[in-house]
Length: 211
Image (cartoon, rainbow, N blue to C red):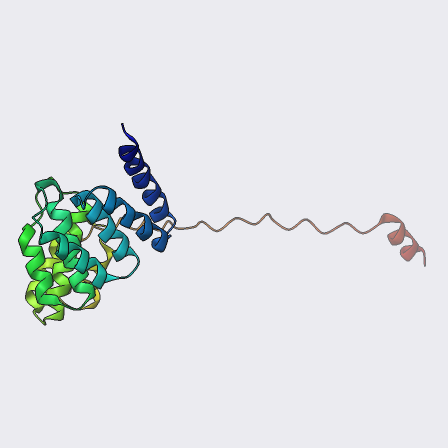
């Protein structure tokens, strides 16, 4: 491993640590360096775009990905992640039609896609349809997000509180609550009988009789 490869490996580690601590600006700085060293490889560009997105900069996220797409499409391993992040960036810019087009470019998630990413794909798609006031398709996408990941709280809340589905259709999407334990009759504790009254002292009775 030469010095350049060693620096690339170290940069990946540094950026990972910075992202864990939400040091977004520092992560972006080192991601720029990584892109330069790798000649703009898809792995480095995708990481750079993720840093921009986590720093709440959707416009720069979109610009970085679109600029790299002009040079060529991503490999099959990165394609889904690239299009999902691009869809998120479009959503962050309120470009809802472009968001749907970006998601369509990758196609629906396959079984090999992690559940969290598959759920996110359906969730972003649902948000786009909701913004475009297509409630039936939004409801269907929210339901798909929950089917992919039952812990997708955002989709569950949209379905329940957004009134996108009638209550009768919500239970199949959610785990059935555990049955409440049957209350048991609490037996009243028995109280001990009161102690007997003390007998009168014999001396006092004798004195009283004598008087």
